[in-house]
Length: 254
Picture 1 (spheres, rainbow, N blue to C red):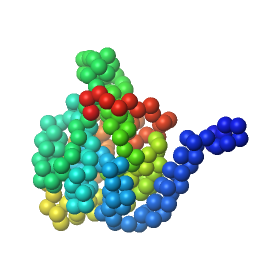
Picture 2 (tube, one colour):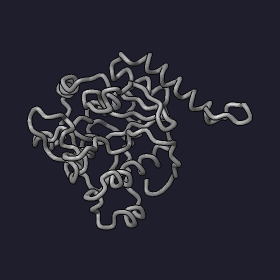
Picture 3 (cartoon, rainbow, N blue to C red):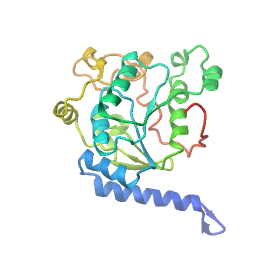
Picture 4 (tube, helix red, strand yellow):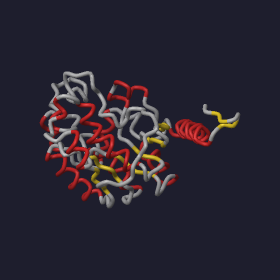
C-alpha cells in the first residue's frame, strides 16, 4: 500500500476497494449460471460496462445471453486488420441475428501501424508487439470509458485460465468471466438449444480463431487453443495479462 505522510493515498484506497468488491462479487456469483452472472453485471454496472468479444469459435453463447438481457450493451470487437474474412462476415451476421445494436469495431491506430508495422509483417518477428498495437492498445483506449468489462474466457482452455475467477479486479477495472465454470459440452449444448450458428471455420478444424497468421487448424484430440501461436510458448495475446495501470489515451479511430 502507498502512504503519503502516514495517510493512505486515494489511489491505494480505490485499489483496495476494487479488490474487495471483486472478492465479494466472486463469492456471490462463483456458482451461478452464466446468464445470472451476466444479469448482475449488466444491471448493476449498466452504462459502465462493455462486453469484449472476438466473434470467434465459442462466442455465440455469451453474446446470445447478453442480447436476451440487454441488446444495447456495448460489444467491443477487435478488428486487427489480420482477421479471417469469415470472422468479419460472422461478426456482421451474428450481431444482426441476435439484435445487438452497439457493436463497436476497434482498430489499431494508423500512425502506430505506419511507424511500428509498415509492412504488416511484425507477426513474423515479434508476435507480442504485433498483438500490442493491434489488440492491447486499441482495447485499452476503448475501455477508458468503462468501469467494468465482460470476457468469454473459460477454465477448460487451460494454462493461466485454470485459476480463472468469475469476477476479478485487474488494471483498475472489474472483469466478469461468466463462462469460467462451463465446459465445452455445456457451451455446445447451449448453442444447440438456441440454434446458434457456428463460426464458419469450426467445420474446418479451427476450435479457436484469432488472426490468420497466428491461427491454424488442430488435430482431433488436441487442446482447443493448440492452433493459436502454434510452435511458440505464447498462449495469450496480452489483453488478459495483468499489467501496471495503463495510461489510457481516449481518442484515435475508436
